[in-house]
Image (cartoon, rainbow, N blue to C red; front, side, top):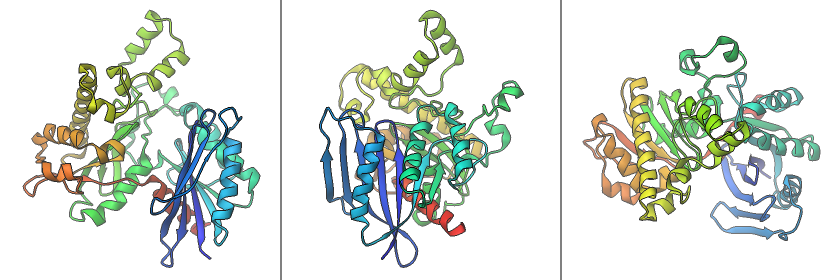
Amino acid sequence: MSDAIVVVNAGSSRVKFSVYLASADGEQRLAANGMADGIGTHHAFKAKDDAGAVLIEHRWPQDAAIGHDQVFAFLGDWLGDFLADHELKAVGHRVVHGGQHYDRPVLIDDEVLEQLDSLVSLAPLHQPHNLTPIRLIRAAMPDIPQVACFDTAFHRGHRRAVDLFAIPRAITDDGVQRYGFHGLSYEYIARTLPSVAPEIAAGKAVTCHLGSGASMCAIENGRSIDSTMGFTALDGLPMGTRCGSIDPGVLLHMMRAYDMDAADIERTLYRDCGLKGVSGISNDMRDLEASDDPNAAEALDVFVFQIGKQLGALAAVLGGLDALVFTAGIGERSPMIRRRVSEGAQWLGVVLDEAANQAGQSVISTSTSEVTVLVIPTDEEMMIAMHTADVLGQS
């Protein structure tokens, strides 16, 4: 019988989950993963084993009243059968915001849950959905330990000046500062670099987490030095539907010229901007790359330009650059974006090997490149499983 850890990454309409089993050497091995998608609309559940074979595929009736509680009841029943020969030791959760208090994963108790509730205003579109399964699992399985793993924790070692806005201190003291996100992804990359490129693992790297949500992080000797996301996950790069960095005066103009209130602006900045807003076509990079619409091309131009701009800034923060890493959906799967970003970074000493880039190899720079360019698939769920096992070992 092996010990099992379940990892949960919950959103408003989608719950992703993974099951890990402890191997003989204590390492976590993926046994299954899946997703409940379309919660509130299409009601679909699917799980695959570690080889990608479908274990279960289920659809609820279109008119069924299916919410997170029904999804987790179904998931719990399925896990009960799947883990019949194993022992569930804990559930690890991705929690977007850990605020100023949490710089590492933590075992969830009443006090922790209350503090995480107090951070909902800092991440209103993410935090409530991260906390929902925690409560449901506590009610159904109160004896199972649960661990919160934070997207902000990896960035908590920044110099204070990096995270301060130039605003009145009273507002800063209320928690308004730069936090940074995608930390679980960046931490996984930092831990993976020593095995992929040991000669530069302790050096200066900029990692580009490019997906529907996109950001970049300056990493030196495995530690976050700066990142493009700030107080919220809106900041920095333009994303699938999010605006990225924007002049605050634009928001004032939207209020005055278009009679928009805070809810209108929030909805627009999170859901109607980014690649979708500029192109007027799609937030999906694959659609834009395939399109001959000039607005799609312009959206790609904006995306690549901002990546290049932020790369220069982060290289300056680091005082040099040894490695450029691409990860996440776009970073791992778009040779075109990798090529364009790398071509724009020639001034930093980047020389791309286009054949290796097209082939999706792990090293896509030439031997003469002053900067090693890498493609490393991220694995936030594995990072959560590792953290959860570590916390259990310490408790």
